[in-house]
Image: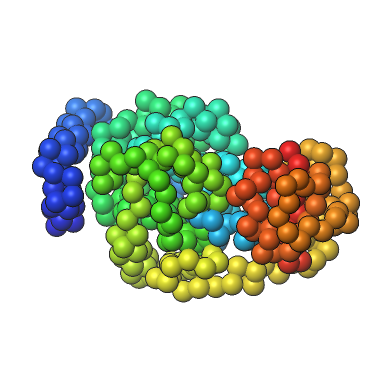
Length: 355
């Protein structure tokens, strides 16, 4: 209750009482719907069957920060993973697809429900969404009720063990931590949860809801929340506070959460080096890379790519296939992503293949 009161006071301060009144009204409508609608017993039963389904396993929760472009994500080929929102922009660059997928953002669901229904849900094993968002947006009207779709009750901003009750707690990552714990995962590795946000030119509808007016510098792909995309103002200090609560809540329950990402400002969870998590040799890595969708679709062998010309500076035109050192490659990805697909990093290099 106290957290709801504090949230209301902040809304009144920054957006005025009319916005506060509107949000209270919408949340009241959610409560009325909960009373009038029968409980979804089938959904609750399906959740009960998921409990501890992956007991003792580890999972990688993938945020969508720019640091993903620095990481050898191909190493996750045989790991359990969960992605969010527009992580589907990364699919064409991967040799695997996430097992789990989640959206809890009411603006995102309105923007990309067609994409979710047609391109994402057919490719993942499990998908999680609020049935009704606290803002009174009914996800059930946007998302097809498929066999792999599980509905959450996100009415209260709390950390929960009794799913499908699940607090959002300022970020989809915290919702995913609750789902992962419920599924039985005891080691949770966060990557791409950078907690760093550069200034982006936006149209502010209010302090919470923004519309992008230019390319996105804050995610792994500049198209993520690019021009015309709606999203919520990232309140980093509030997210970090909730992460601290998540750490306290789940540590007591024997669940270890680590930050295995690169850089960023998320220091709540102990850091681990992503590369040291895997016991894999270079020959195996080459086999993994050779099996990547990018190469298979073009019938190209990884050894051909390794012999491609080396580019050591930005150019007006690039070869069909080329390689760079780590630093240049990382800086080129946002600029070339619409015309080239990157592979790497591998052996301190990036490799680019024209679309």
